[in-house]
Amino acid sequence: ECTRIIFISDVHLGHRYTPTTYIVDNLLLYVVNDRVFKELDALIISGDLFDKLLKLNVKGLSCIHRLIFEMLRLAKLYNVAIRILEGTPSHDMEQAKIIIDINAYRGFNADVKYYDTCQIINDEALGLTIGYIQDEHLDSYIEAQAEMEGHPLLSPSVSMHTIGAGGGSIA
Image 1: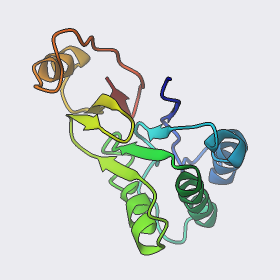
Image 2 (image 1 turned 60 degrees about the horizontal axis):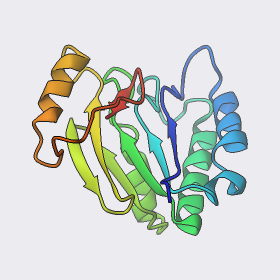
Image 3 (image 1 turned 60 degrees about the vertical axis):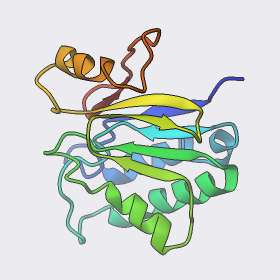
Image 4 (image 1 turned 30 degrees about the horizontal axis):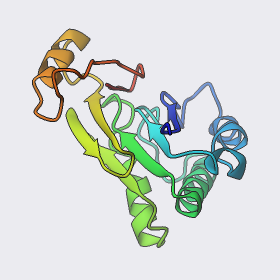
């Protein structure tokens, strides 16, 4: 049986040219809904969920909260793991950590993890070993690949494949 994962990246909530309401409405329509989550094992947000540091009075903040609440509700209901990779420092600015906070404070207790460093994780919930490479961690993909290939969780038979762009990468 395969692990069913959806990757999203470079969402850029709060972007000045694409209204946040438009982005959230489309995520709710195409990704964060019962139809998709009931067939899913994991949602990986591989960086740049946010475009810039958002103020509490920003237009669209309530729909961001709606997206996060629905994502967490569905993740708990359908046992979907959510993995979040911190993206470009000038975009995310650690704001995606709010998903961790809401998950805990509102009692969703979904399986959510947040990564802000380059690391390889043996994710037992998914049955996978995943390499997280934060954007701008090193000067090049070649340097990041070389750093990760020597990691003890990777056997010599594991090949490196990169998924994602912009905000961060999953190897």
